[in-house]
Image 1 (spheres, rainbow, N blue to C red):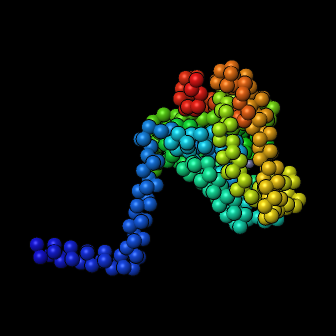
Image 2: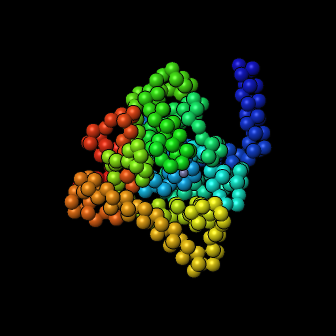
Image 3: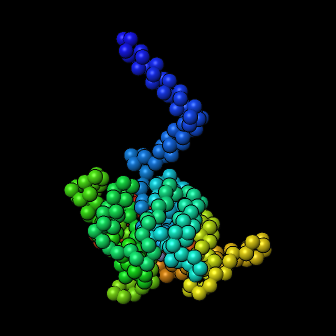
Length: 322
Ligand SMILES: [Zn+2]
């Protein structure tokens, strides 16, 4: 008994010293913070779990920012992964400083969209390869997120990082269910539904959407999220190439004008998706609503994941109640 008491006393003293050293309030708040973060993101809470792979720190936001905000608003769990760190995507800066800047930008965008997580993999921009190591990274990320839905580029998109992100996503399909591949992370009991992000490339086959989502109600939020990707706005999105930087003005009126230009760019894109796939919108939303949709995002089911029925697809995209 004496010995046990001594241990208890010594333990208490150690805790007291630790509390004094680190600050008791910090320890308590740190603990509360981690609990608060963990609570709304439980894999068993009955909510959908979605992971989106984009090649650069802007692709997930551009192609799926609207649908992600809509899922998040219903309490579903969305994670964006940029498979490269975007460290050459600018006219004047490159390397570590650009990677850090772009990582901070997409994390800010994720907060605006209301999604749970945004991760940037530390692969060089323009150098992603469909290696076994990267395949295993995809498998682990999909399993750790316990994904019901996985999204990524098609393997005939224009940029090699987009294409190899598509290949890596395809290569992870089914393998996420195989127990003895990456046995350090438990396999998924069933293959998620894998979907391609939209693109406009025709060869060898054009994008054919299975699901087109009206994003009118969140378009402003998506535009707000894209507006924080300033390294893109001042460089590639300003000039279409990597020749020069056109800084975002600080003066309010000029800044507002620039913002409207950026908004208009993405409004056009999402409008053209809605118009191009109008028949699908009408099929999904009915004649009246389908005709009125202004902005849309579109997705195509990849054959290598689980093949959902039309009914299951509507459960995974719970936005079509009539
Ligand atoms: Zn990209």
